[in-house]
Length: 248
Image 1 (cartoon, helix red, strand yellow):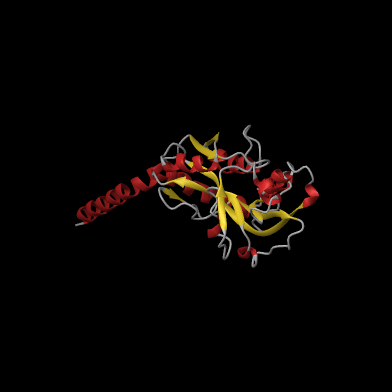
Image 2: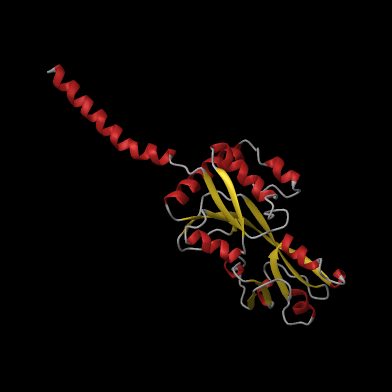
């Protein structure tokens, strides 16, 4: 009788171990590197590997044994690389910006200060009044999904022609992250003709490939961000790059 009970017990333990094995394997099956694609943003994702975002992501992944490999490409191409599985994640996405063949983690890693650039002679826009104006932004950023009541907008391929568009009255305001707006304004012969207005902060995410490797890396990202935010070890990185801390 006792032997029969021990036999049943060992069978149950064996079955439990077999059921747990795939979960344990999935937990341990992390790649040796993460391939990150990003546009080049000043002080955030520089081509040489410097910048706040690269510092954050190395702090997230490298202590877990996953090396960070970066690729600098235009923003829309970075999304395509992830959707085709040629990169594991792209940097600087807004939440649910892309729905096909990508997944989003729970945690963001930073936040964008969204600003508008216009002539100083224009009325000062607000988040509530922005929809009254003719707006322009770079193709792929989809601000109509994140800012309220935007009705008149157009998308352009590059930022080089924005100042003439504003000066000649073809559009009223250019919408972008504050760093990009400031970079455009530096090209103005007379910057005093223009004004920058901050309108909203939007959390920034990684968009991961919707495949087993991407899902494993997204889960790792969330686990590591949970730890790093709780112990505030990312705060010195934001202080170093003189950027506001987005987790208070």
